[in-house]
Image (cartoon, rainbow, N blue to C red; front, side, top):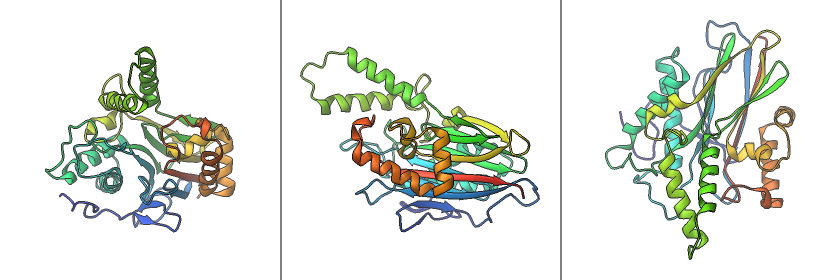
Length: 317
């Protein structure tokens, strides 16, 4: 059933906006494990904030019972067509709600299958007025984690990384296909004579080429209008018990992971320690200071970005 434009699919939780401007979608289910499980309890803390000066947050934090996640809507550069009357904020709200419905309908399904079902449902939410084959159709990165008794499974699609503290060892799950595609584009651009092309024209050309690589073999994959993208996500499972059990996990959009990946303010272990000790808001504050004081270290077009952080901590029940 299609939802009204700009709303949330029927049965989905509506995102709540906190005083910090964060967007969170939560189900009514109580935190912790699902009924009938006896695994470690999951404690969740999160923060999400729009870029300074922007009223709309195109990130979203979601929580549906044992499933948590972050979504990062792809900002549309000014002057670019999308073939769609909806924006990235609309897309992430609908995708989050549809993920919740898919998980509720089939709790035993893989995260890949639930995400594919959600993407397919959002296609219907668009209605008939959008060209969903347009290369600029609204899209979002996805990072999901699901606690299930004695183990946790996860999914990462595009550049929203997952940081895991597994038995005291910090592992990072990332999908670097977008970065690889962008590196290829930069090499191609460097090899082509610029002629009379101004920077704005070169930027438009690079965005056009990037769009052509979205959800294509030898390109990169992201949640958009093609449910098949879900089956190209990076996925895995880790135990919750024993010496190699998962202790902590951080789900990040790139507006928060840039603290490590671009600014080099922390390593991944230091990031986990910061959000554990001071909360997810502390990481966003650190990034905001770096965006203000060290813009020379940024490797993105935007001077500042929406940022979201979810910290999951696991303790014996």
